[in-house]
Image 1 (cartoon, rainbow, N blue to C red):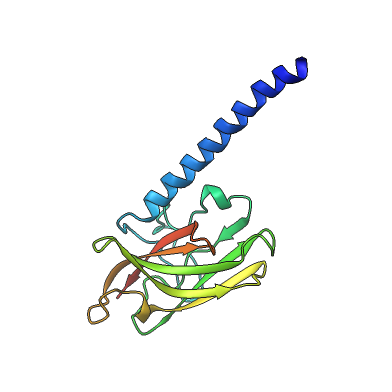
Image 2 (cartoon, rainbow, N blue to C red):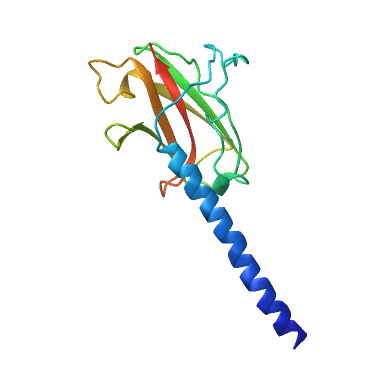
Length: 166
C-alpha cells in the first residue's frame, strides 16, 4: 500500500518535471525562430571581443543541456560574404546525436534553408566550416544580420546565433 502511494506521488511529479523541460525547449525554439538581434564579435581565430557579446547567441537548448558541453561563438563575426565561418560544438558523447544540420532562417519570410549538413557518425568535437555566401536568402544583397539555427537529425534546435555579413 505504501508503495502504491509513493507511486501515485512520483509519477505525477515526473510528468510535471518533463512538461517543464518541454516548455523550456519550446520557449528556446520560439526564441531561435525570432528576429536576429545583435551578435557576438569574434576574430578570425575565434577570440571573443568581451565588450561585444550577445548573451542570446550560441546558448545550448534545454533538451541538449547534458548532451552538448559547449558551443563556441561562430568566427569570424562580422564576416565578408566571400569568406568562411567556423563553428565548433563539443559533445558529451559520440552516439547521442546522429547528424548536425545548420539552417539560415529568415524572420521576414518565415522560412529556412540548409547551409551545412554534418552526417554521422558524429565525433565528440564537431568543427563546421560554412561559406558565408550561402547564408543570405537574398544573395544579390547579402549584407546584414542573419540568423543561423543548428539542429539534430530530427530538427530539434541545439543552438542558434546571429552573423553579421559586411
